Length: 125
Image (spheres, helix red, strand yellow):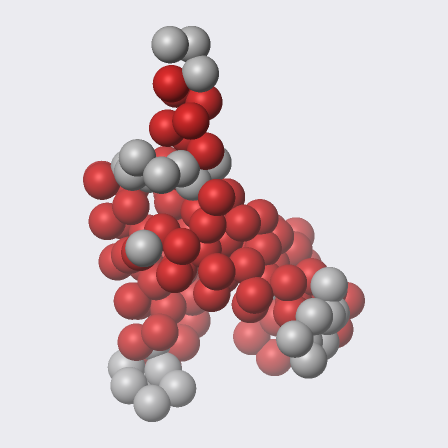
């Protein structure tokens, strides 16, 4: 359930950034906002957007769970530090920090029995 929750949230947020779904800005506007307002270089802004989008999808499906969890954890570590000047609660670093902790928990726990990873591992049986 934890994997589905974080995966679904990250996929939706990533889809809003990459594809403009869910009233999102789309990729070009998001990258411009990251570079101009936050000061993140464009290549890292693209990487962040696609990490949320594809990493969220992988986590939701339980596919390449541990590598996706590492990517999300790195992304959310950066996001936590970027948001920290706003404070921790109420629009600050609490949200990315929570996603970071969940990604680390999934890294340690693995995908679980109901995942694409488990299905693939058991396909040779």
